[in-house]
Length: 190
Image 1 (cartoon, rainbow, N blue to C red):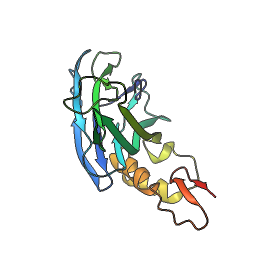
Image 2: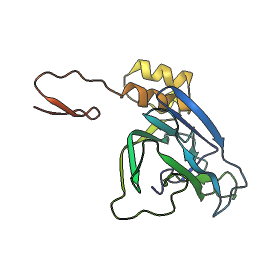
Image 3: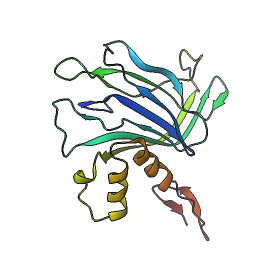
Image 4: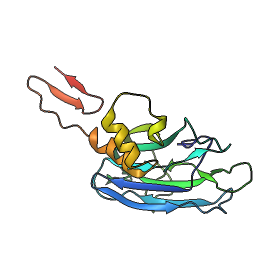
């Protein structure tokens, strides 16, 4: 997956699972092309997993009216060489730097788990992801949801907002007379 952060400068990336924060990666201000802020990072625990480009801002210095990028991985299943894996692995390579060449941004790429050099015929990867752009601060939010506005006031540009999105939309459905095909977005076969 390329270009996830677009033209945003990102100084840290937080990642977590259904239970909350797993870790935070500080993106080195000296990161250069062909370098990575993280390589072969497996998102541990149970999903949904989340990756947040915390408070990223435009590389032109614009600090208003821009969201920051986040990824929610609802489901992941990899079968390579007959071995199943249920946890996604990512890398965070250099993407671009702002005009002064400092404060680089990183990209996000899904990569095979550690020890897998290539895919072969019959290998599969099934993944359900959501790419979410969230307001960095409450002043950038224009809808009437006051609970969300208060959350943005309390947690501006943080991983907590991505976690809130991942956890809050991890719906558990009880259906009579049909079968749940997908929990989010809701898809039911009657």
